[in-house]
Structures are given as C-alpha cells and as structure tokens.
Image 1 (tube, helix red, strand yellow):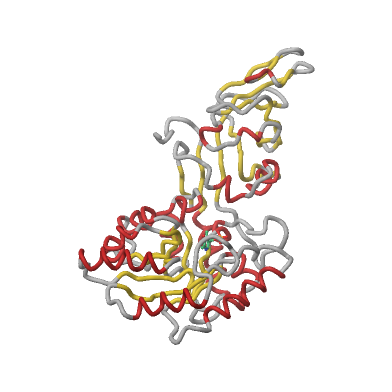
Image 2: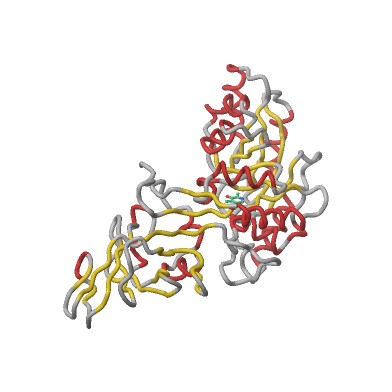
Amino acid sequence: MVVGVHRPTQLVIDRQALHDNIQAEVTRLASGCELFMVVKANGYGHGAVQVAQVAKEAGATGFCVAILDEALELRAAGFNEPILVLGVTEPEDAPLMAQQHISATVAATDWLVAADAYLALAQPTAPLQVHLGLDTGMGRIGFKTTTELTTAVTYLATHATLNFEGIFTHFATADSPDETYFKQQVAKWQTLTAVLKERPRYVHVSNSATSLWHAACNDNMVRFGVAGYGLNPSGTAIPAPYALKPALSLTSQLVHSKQVVAGESVGYGATYTAQQTEWVGTVPIGYADGYERRLQGFHVLVDGQACEIIGRVCMDQLMIRLPHDYARGTRVTLIGRDGDHVITLQEMADYCQTIHYELACGFTSRLPRVYRH
Ligand SMILES: *Cc1c(COP(=O)(O)O)cnc(C)c1O
C-alpha cells in the first residue's frame, strides 16, 4: 500500500516517550539483567527500525521479533545486537539465520534435526544460536516434558552446527491480578529447567507484565514489549509501577464541513439521521487505515472538544458532529491530547471490546509515521 503523504492524516510517534518508558524499565532491572525490546509487527505499529534505535539509546541490548523477515529488516538497517525470533521459523532458513547471527526459537527436537541437515550442507561461518522454548501453560509452542527437553539439550550439545544460547517460557496471565495460574506456570518452569546441567547465556521468562509486576522471576533478560510503547499490559486492571507514557497519537484535519437539517442522513446504510440542524465535518481516515468500523459512536477531538463519530466509518473517511462550523484544515485528534481532553488507545480498545495491542498493530502502512522529539 502507498503511504498517504498528500493527505493530512498521520500517526505521530513520540520518541521521548518511548525512551522514557524503556529507560524506566532498564533502571528497575536487577544488575546483570538485560532488556531486549520487542519490536515485532513493525514495533506494534510504531515503526520497528525507529523504535529499535530509541530502545538502543535507552539501554536495550537486544531485540525480539515474531518472524524472520522482521529480524532481517533490523539487520538491513544496521543493528548488530542479538535478535531473537520468537515464532517458529523454517528449518530451511537455519543457514540464513546462522549467517545473520539471528537466534531461533526452537520448540521441538525434529526441528533441530532438520536444521542441522541444512546447516551441514550450507556450512555457515557461525553456528545457529538456539533458544529452547518451554510450554509451561501458554499452550502455544515449546517443550512440555523433561524427557523432550533433555533430548533437545543433548542434541544441541552433540552438534557443532548449533549453539544452545537461551531457554525461555511465556506466561499466559502475568497481566492478571489473580496469580494462581501464573504460579502454576512458574512451578512448571522450575521443574523443567531443573534438568539443565548448564545454564545457557540467556534465561528469560518475562514479557512486560511479568517484568512490571513479577520482577523477581526475571532471571537475566526480559522481553519488553507493550509497556515500552507506554501501554499498560493489563489494560486498567493493575497500575504500573511508574507512569507509562503512550508514544502514539493519531491526528488529521477536517477536509469538509457542512450543515445538515433535521431528517438528513449521514453515511452508508443511512444509520444516522439528524434530529435538528447541525454541522457535520468529514475526516480523511477510515477502516483501510486501521481505524475500526466498530468506532461508530466513539469520538474525536476538535478544538479541545469531543465530537461524536456519526454514521458508519467508511473505508477512507468518517463523519463527525461539530458544535458549529469549522474551517477546512482544522486539526482533528483521534488519539492523543487536545487541550484538556485526551483520547487513549485504551479507551478506543474498551469501546471496540478489544485490547490496545490489536488496535496499535492494526494501523496500516497507508498512515505515515512521523517521529517527534
Ligand atoms: C509478544 C511477546 C512478548 C512481549 O509481550 P508484551 O506483552 O508486549 O510485553 C514477549 N514474549 C513473547 C514470547 C511474545 O510473543
């Protein structure tokens, strides 16, 4: 998709906010514990390369991504730090990862066997760095038993194409005030890792929620994601130990404004009909930009006031009710502050009955990302 640079709609990313969130967490970590910034899904929509740069300046010593292409993007941008791919990659790509010093998450020994065959053929100059994933209750990927884990560790120890660099797990409920399931996962993690005779370089369990609220579990690396972007992983359930600063705002401008009279309708399906004479403004953003159709009835800010989104959100435009006429070019804030009012991704997510993660990474590439500070 092209980037809409000739349209006055932008995602504005506050570098200082990113920096402050990440640095606040780095400062809280026990000595010897490193922070790898999670920049998957284009840095949760904020721009992976730009976020990685700020994270590095704020003290991050490595990065996590979801898929190999995201790791390659960082390497192409010149980052030399460790990068861990959190998802399962293709064994065929093991030589490429080894050559690029990109670490693989491994969830089964047959993957190691397949990768070893490709590595033996390609003979990259370095072994493939492997992090073993343990499934302690997330039910997604990873080894579940001590037998399976022991087999994998033995395989790694006896194959020079592979290096056992890390071991980790992922918690399903670290963002919940109820710690019952979290504690069960910790117990499984302890049982599984007890079979290790040697600790690899990186031992890690913490996403943002774990690092914020269960820092005692951290071990020697945290995979810090959503909180770095200034978003509370629990939504509003648990307060963060320091003020998280949301880094993303979304702004546009009125491209049209008009008066409608009682009985006139607005938008597809004519779902909104004016009850009286009112001013209607048009804003050039829609669901093709990731501004959800479900946001009909939500609001934006114009001149420091909340204005309701009336009628259905279209693919590329939406309509709002204005208190009076405003000139074309008047600023519209869809996320962020205008005067005394703020619209947060959290409020938008609550309105859409989803989580801020989904909205943040749903903004499409048509929206230009503009960096401030
Ligand atoms: C996405 C992800 C993270 C980061 O999670 P946040 O909640 O954004 O901090 C950490 N670890 C794994 C395995 C992940 O998939």
